[in-house]
Amino acid sequence: MTIGQSVIRSAGEVSYGEIEYSYGGRSAKSRSTSHREALPLLYGLAGVPAPTPQIGQEYPGYPLVSDGWIALPWFFVILPLSIAVAWWRWNRHAPRISAEFVKNGGKP
Image (cartoon, rainbow, N blue to C red; front, side):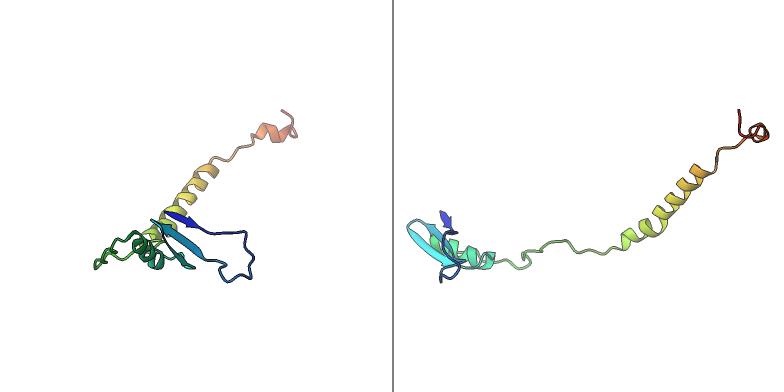
């Protein structure tokens, strides 16, 4: 099978943007790259009947759309509490300045 698209042609030509499919001495042209148009062309060129679509086998698409409720506790409870606990543990042992250091005017 050969699929070709010429980029040498000028933009004003009628065949600009066409994709030519060739297989077994047959050829077909199309401007679409959609699977809904390209696959029937390819099956036709190969002389093979296209498979019949099965119910429930439609392409689901991307991105996967799902509910975000499971992430809510993470972002609104667990993560803020983790940050607060880490901040509290980091700052609860502040460096202490000894009384002698203050009495001596900052000299050790």
